[in-house]
Length: 252
Image 1 (cartoon, rainbow, N blue to C red):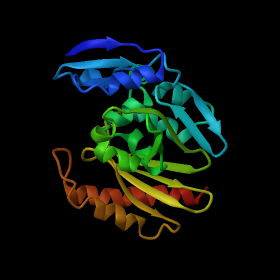
Image 2: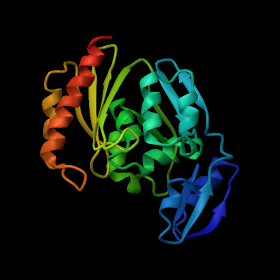
Image 3: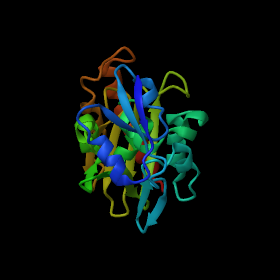
Protein backbone atom coordinates (compact mmCIF):
# COMPACT_ATOMS: atom_id res chain seq x y z
CA UNK A 1 0.00 0.00 0.00
CA UNK A 2 1.36 3.43 -0.97
CA UNK A 3 1.06 5.74 2.02
CA UNK A 4 3.14 8.70 0.77
CA UNK A 5 3.85 10.15 -2.64
CA UNK A 6 6.70 12.58 -3.29
CA UNK A 7 7.79 14.27 -6.52
CA UNK A 8 11.10 16.03 -5.77
CA UNK A 9 12.62 18.64 -8.06
CA UNK A 10 16.24 17.95 -7.14
CA UNK A 11 18.44 14.89 -6.81
CA UNK A 12 19.42 15.98 -3.30
CA UNK A 13 15.80 16.01 -2.17
CA UNK A 14 15.14 12.59 -3.74
CA UNK A 15 18.18 11.03 -2.05
CA UNK A 16 17.21 12.53 1.31
CA UNK A 17 13.77 10.93 1.05
CA UNK A 18 15.21 7.55 0.02
CA UNK A 19 17.65 7.60 2.95
CA UNK A 20 14.91 7.82 5.59
CA UNK A 21 14.95 5.08 8.21
CA UNK A 22 11.48 5.54 9.66
CA UNK A 23 9.53 4.53 6.55
CA UNK A 24 10.38 2.29 3.63
CA UNK A 25 10.75 4.57 0.63
CA UNK A 26 11.18 3.46 -2.95
CA UNK A 27 11.79 5.29 -6.22
CA UNK A 28 9.40 4.99 -9.14
CA UNK A 29 9.95 5.72 -12.79
CA UNK A 30 7.04 4.18 -14.63
CA UNK A 31 5.72 2.39 -11.55
CA UNK A 32 5.15 -0.95 -13.31
CA UNK A 33 7.37 -2.93 -10.93
CA UNK A 34 6.04 -1.27 -7.79
CA UNK A 35 2.44 -1.88 -8.79
CA UNK A 36 3.10 -5.63 -8.69
CA UNK A 37 4.36 -5.59 -5.10
CA UNK A 38 2.43 -3.55 -2.56
CA UNK A 39 2.22 -6.02 0.31
CA UNK A 40 3.52 -3.51 2.86
CA UNK A 41 3.24 0.25 3.52
CA UNK A 42 5.64 2.14 1.29
CA UNK A 43 6.39 5.74 0.40
CA UNK A 44 7.27 6.46 -3.21
CA UNK A 45 9.56 9.03 -4.78
CA UNK A 46 8.57 9.94 -8.34
CA UNK A 47 11.72 10.54 -10.41
CA UNK A 48 10.22 12.13 -13.50
CA UNK A 49 11.33 15.70 -12.66
CA UNK A 50 14.98 14.81 -12.10
CA UNK A 51 16.17 14.95 -15.72
CA UNK A 52 17.57 11.43 -15.76
CA UNK A 53 15.84 10.41 -18.99
CA UNK A 54 18.57 11.27 -21.50
CA UNK A 55 20.33 8.98 -23.98
CA UNK A 56 23.94 10.07 -24.48
CA UNK A 57 26.48 8.78 -26.97
CA UNK A 58 29.89 8.90 -25.30
CA UNK A 59 32.07 7.52 -28.07
CA UNK A 60 32.18 3.76 -27.68
CA UNK A 61 29.83 3.91 -24.68
CA UNK A 62 26.09 4.53 -24.67
CA UNK A 63 24.72 6.04 -21.46
CA UNK A 64 21.02 5.99 -20.69
CA UNK A 65 19.33 7.78 -17.84
CA UNK A 66 17.51 5.58 -15.36
CA UNK A 67 14.03 6.79 -16.32
CA UNK A 68 14.46 6.22 -20.05
CA UNK A 69 11.60 3.88 -20.91
CA UNK A 70 11.99 0.60 -22.75
CA UNK A 71 10.11 2.14 -25.67
CA UNK A 72 12.43 5.19 -25.68
CA UNK A 73 15.37 2.81 -25.80
CA UNK A 74 13.86 0.72 -28.56
CA UNK A 75 13.24 3.79 -30.72
CA UNK A 76 16.70 5.28 -30.25
CA UNK A 77 18.48 5.34 -33.61
CA UNK A 78 21.77 4.08 -32.15
CA UNK A 79 20.40 0.93 -30.51
CA UNK A 80 21.35 -2.21 -32.38
CA UNK A 81 18.62 -4.24 -34.15
CA UNK A 82 19.13 -7.40 -32.07
CA UNK A 83 18.63 -5.43 -28.87
CA UNK A 84 15.42 -3.98 -30.29
CA UNK A 85 14.04 -7.52 -30.66
CA UNK A 86 15.11 -8.35 -27.11
CA UNK A 87 13.24 -5.31 -25.76
CA UNK A 88 10.13 -6.36 -27.68
CA UNK A 89 10.42 -9.81 -26.14
CA UNK A 90 10.72 -8.27 -22.67
CA UNK A 91 7.41 -6.41 -22.62
CA UNK A 92 4.35 -5.48 -24.64
CA UNK A 93 4.04 -2.07 -26.28
CA UNK A 94 1.85 -0.64 -23.50
CA UNK A 95 4.28 -1.75 -20.79
CA UNK A 96 7.29 -0.50 -22.77
CA UNK A 97 5.73 2.97 -22.83
CA UNK A 98 5.94 3.31 -19.05
CA UNK A 99 8.53 0.79 -17.81
CA UNK A 100 11.88 2.45 -17.07
CA UNK A 101 15.13 0.67 -17.82
CA UNK A 102 16.31 0.93 -14.21
CA UNK A 103 13.00 -0.32 -12.85
CA UNK A 104 13.04 -3.22 -15.29
CA UNK A 105 16.49 -4.28 -14.11
CA UNK A 106 15.62 -3.88 -10.43
CA UNK A 107 12.51 -6.05 -10.86
CA UNK A 108 14.02 -8.54 -13.32
CA UNK A 109 13.79 -12.25 -12.67
CA UNK A 110 16.03 -14.83 -14.28
CA UNK A 111 13.56 -15.04 -17.16
CA UNK A 112 14.12 -11.44 -18.27
CA UNK A 113 15.50 -11.22 -21.85
CA UNK A 114 16.45 -7.57 -21.26
CA UNK A 115 18.49 -8.25 -18.12
CA UNK A 116 20.13 -11.28 -19.78
CA UNK A 117 21.23 -9.20 -22.77
CA UNK A 118 22.53 -6.32 -20.69
CA UNK A 119 24.45 -8.76 -18.49
CA UNK A 120 26.18 -10.17 -21.58
CA UNK A 121 27.03 -6.60 -22.64
CA UNK A 122 28.86 -5.94 -19.36
CA UNK A 123 26.46 -3.15 -18.45
CA UNK A 124 27.48 -0.77 -15.69
CA UNK A 125 25.12 1.03 -13.30
CA UNK A 126 25.81 4.51 -11.96
CA UNK A 127 24.47 4.86 -8.43
CA UNK A 128 24.09 7.93 -6.22
CA UNK A 129 24.82 9.41 -3.73
CA UNK A 130 28.27 7.80 -3.63
CA UNK A 131 28.77 8.01 -7.42
CA UNK A 132 29.49 4.31 -7.40
CA UNK A 133 29.76 2.37 -10.65
CA UNK A 134 28.82 -1.28 -10.33
CA UNK A 135 28.57 -4.04 -12.89
CA UNK A 136 25.12 -5.47 -13.49
CA UNK A 137 26.42 -8.94 -12.64
CA UNK A 138 27.43 -7.76 -9.17
CA UNK A 139 24.25 -5.76 -8.69
CA UNK A 140 21.55 -8.30 -9.52
CA UNK A 141 22.14 -10.90 -6.76
CA UNK A 142 22.23 -8.25 -4.02
CA UNK A 143 20.05 -5.54 -5.53
CA UNK A 144 17.89 -4.98 -2.44
CA UNK A 145 21.02 -4.27 -0.36
CA UNK A 146 22.59 -2.07 -3.02
CA UNK A 147 19.56 0.21 -3.24
CA UNK A 148 19.04 0.98 0.43
CA UNK A 149 19.17 4.77 0.46
CA UNK A 150 20.65 4.81 -3.03
CA UNK A 151 19.38 5.50 -6.51
CA UNK A 152 20.34 4.23 -9.96
CA UNK A 153 20.72 7.36 -12.10
CA UNK A 154 22.04 5.83 -15.33
CA UNK A 155 23.26 2.68 -17.03
CA UNK A 156 25.98 2.37 -19.64
CA UNK A 157 27.15 -0.28 -22.07
CA UNK A 158 29.42 -0.44 -25.15
CA UNK A 159 27.88 0.54 -28.47
CA UNK A 160 30.66 -0.97 -30.61
CA UNK A 161 29.84 -4.61 -29.87
CA UNK A 162 27.79 -7.27 -31.64
CA UNK A 163 25.14 -9.19 -29.74
CA UNK A 164 23.11 -12.27 -30.61
CA UNK A 165 20.14 -13.60 -28.69
CA UNK A 166 18.56 -17.04 -28.86
CA UNK A 167 15.70 -18.43 -26.80
CA UNK A 168 13.22 -21.23 -26.32
CA UNK A 169 9.76 -20.53 -24.89
CA UNK A 170 6.39 -22.23 -24.84
CA UNK A 171 5.15 -19.63 -27.31
CA UNK A 172 6.90 -16.74 -29.10
CA UNK A 173 5.33 -14.20 -26.73
CA UNK A 174 6.15 -16.08 -23.51
CA UNK A 175 9.16 -15.34 -21.36
CA UNK A 176 11.91 -17.84 -22.13
CA UNK A 177 12.46 -21.20 -20.54
CA UNK A 178 16.06 -20.84 -21.68
CA UNK A 179 17.68 -17.84 -23.35
CA UNK A 180 21.24 -17.00 -24.25
CA UNK A 181 22.83 -13.66 -25.05
CA UNK A 182 26.32 -13.65 -26.56
CA UNK A 183 28.23 -10.40 -26.97
CA UNK A 184 31.45 -9.89 -28.94
CA UNK A 185 33.81 -6.92 -28.76
CA UNK A 186 36.05 -5.70 -31.65
CA UNK A 187 39.00 -7.00 -29.61
CA UNK A 188 37.56 -10.53 -29.81
CA UNK A 189 36.33 -10.59 -26.22
CA UNK A 190 33.19 -12.74 -25.81
CA UNK A 191 30.71 -12.72 -22.94
CA UNK A 192 27.83 -15.16 -22.50
CA UNK A 193 24.82 -14.79 -20.19
CA UNK A 194 21.98 -17.24 -19.59
CA UNK A 195 18.38 -16.51 -18.70
CA UNK A 196 15.16 -18.43 -18.27
CA UNK A 197 15.60 -19.61 -14.69
CA UNK A 198 15.95 -18.38 -11.14
CA UNK A 199 15.96 -14.97 -9.51
CA UNK A 200 18.38 -13.36 -11.96
CA UNK A 201 20.15 -14.11 -15.23
CA UNK A 202 23.50 -15.83 -14.93
CA UNK A 203 26.86 -14.72 -16.33
CA UNK A 204 28.70 -17.85 -17.52
CA UNK A 205 31.61 -16.98 -19.80
CA UNK A 206 34.10 -14.18 -20.52
CA UNK A 207 37.13 -14.76 -22.73
CA UNK A 208 38.93 -13.99 -25.95
CA UNK A 209 38.27 -17.41 -27.44
CA UNK A 210 34.84 -18.98 -27.72
CA UNK A 211 36.05 -22.50 -27.02
CA UNK A 212 34.42 -23.78 -23.87
CA UNK A 213 31.48 -21.37 -23.96
CA UNK A 214 28.96 -24.11 -24.83
CA UNK A 215 30.20 -26.33 -22.01
CA UNK A 216 30.18 -23.41 -19.57
CA UNK A 217 26.54 -22.71 -20.47
CA UNK A 218 25.64 -26.36 -20.07
CA UNK A 219 27.34 -26.69 -16.69
CA UNK A 220 25.77 -23.50 -15.38
CA UNK A 221 22.29 -25.02 -15.58
CA UNK A 222 23.08 -28.33 -13.89
CA UNK A 223 20.58 -27.50 -11.12
CA UNK A 224 18.18 -25.35 -13.15
CA UNK A 225 14.97 -27.23 -12.52
CA UNK A 226 11.54 -25.73 -11.85
CA UNK A 227 7.91 -26.09 -12.90
CA UNK A 228 8.74 -24.93 -16.42
CA UNK A 229 11.55 -27.34 -17.32
CA UNK A 230 14.01 -29.87 -15.96
CA UNK A 231 17.71 -29.23 -15.46
CA UNK A 232 18.83 -31.79 -18.06
CA UNK A 233 16.63 -30.19 -20.71
CA UNK A 234 17.89 -26.71 -19.86
CA UNK A 235 21.50 -27.88 -19.98
CA UNK A 236 21.18 -29.26 -23.49
CA UNK A 237 19.22 -26.29 -24.78
CA UNK A 238 21.65 -23.78 -23.23
CA UNK A 239 24.56 -25.46 -24.99
CA UNK A 240 22.75 -25.55 -28.35
CA UNK A 241 21.60 -21.94 -28.16
CA UNK A 242 25.08 -20.76 -27.21
CA UNK A 243 26.56 -22.60 -30.17
CA UNK A 244 23.93 -21.12 -32.46
CA UNK A 245 24.56 -17.56 -31.26
CA UNK A 246 28.33 -17.97 -31.63
CA UNK A 247 27.88 -19.27 -35.17
CA UNK A 248 25.79 -16.22 -36.07
CA UNK A 249 28.46 -13.91 -34.66
CA UNK A 250 31.18 -15.69 -36.62
CA UNK A 251 29.37 -14.98 -39.89
CA UNK A 252 29.45 -11.21 -39.39
